Length: 228
Image (spheres, helix red, strand yellow):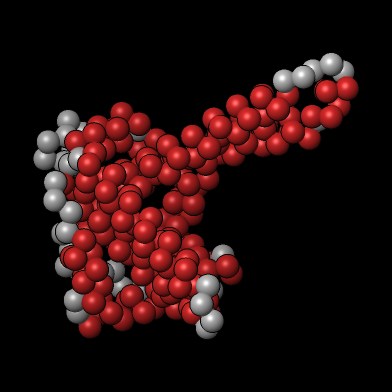
């Protein structure tokens, strides 16, 4: 499947309404650390992905109480999915740190290979983090397509969709990663760091547009079609 990166770049600026919604989200994400704005932004990104999957030409609006409630609900759902996905690698790495902490004590008792054990735990944790980061965008799209958190953990469906467009999915990861790296480098510049949240929101919209298009493109040939 061909990836239209140019569409993802141009889309948020394709109409006055889209630009306004992009600006509102950018301002909200500047103060994401206040938690509620961050949750609202996550929920908005979910609604944006829904619009893309449904072929809606416009970005979701921010200006209704109903939409804000929807953002909060979906924002917490996304947060829960991300936490559950990273929990296993986190616990494994914590176990490695625990073993590192008792290195000296075990060595005094005659155990010589603690470092190897620790390294093994860390290695497994790092590999799992890489796998999680690779699967997570498609897992989130599974949730977006149905609204059910449990579908984000339907690994059979997720792997099926990824393998159908593996090269496109892999290239998308590289491009999105490059955009995040560029954004982080820009944030390190004087004065730019004050609007870091705004830049990250724009990158999130860009990435979400691409991943949603890839997900929608997998429905025609997948035995797990998109469900609404």
